[in-house]
Amino acid sequence: MVCCARGSQQDLTYNNAFEDKSTRRSFIMKVCTITAFMLLATTGVMAIFVTNDDAKDWLLKHLWLVIIAVCVQMVILIMVCYCPFLFRKKPINYVLLSIFVAAESITLSFITMRYLPAQVLMAIGYTGLLVTALALFARFAPCDFTGCGPYLLVLFLVMLIMGIVMIFYRSYWLLCVYCSLGILVYSLYLVVDIQMMIGGTHKNQYSEEDYVLAALSIYIDIVHLFIYILMLIGLLDE
Image 1 (cartoon, rainbow, N blue to C red):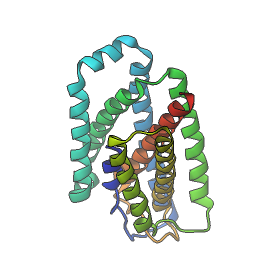
Image 2: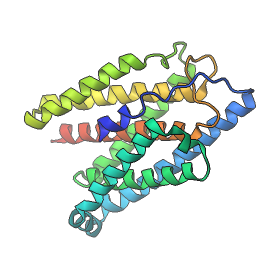
Image 3: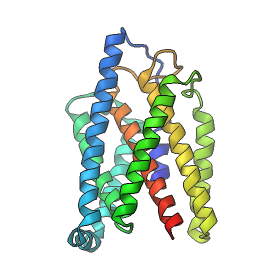
């Protein structure tokens, strides 16, 4: 799911300048607010299943719900690729976004259940620090990463191949390398998405109507950063 989710965001680049700085600031504020609510909702759902044993048992007895959640995410991400206009129309864009967040929250809860609450809390903290650092870097970096899509796609394909290899051959060091590569790839994608949101002198940027697509892209980047950081913490603790 991790690979498919990021791969579905490959072509969300637009050469579209905003009319003025106030419009751009309003767009950035809207994207950040939506992303924050999405992350808070996901964290709240995840906290229930990480800290409550009854909730864990319930989800384990209803694994079909996790399967449905993964399928829902795939369908919505396919819609992002082939029907992006749906994410520019109210209220259907918010409805699709809410469904995706609900599905992602269930999937992420299932992933995090096997980890200790302390490990999950540590991963949240590290993710927050990394996202803050990457956001500052994306804002003040003199270089433009929005044109690096083909190079990021190559790294993404390397991750995909490694993921397939690990199905048949599991190694501690290979898992560590895979998690580290995942953190690197999604860090770069987050920088690209933030620069596309900021716009200005960057080659590619989101249009004014793409606030939901921008929030969804950044949300996916942050969630997957958290997953890989959590996996790496679990491996190092073992």
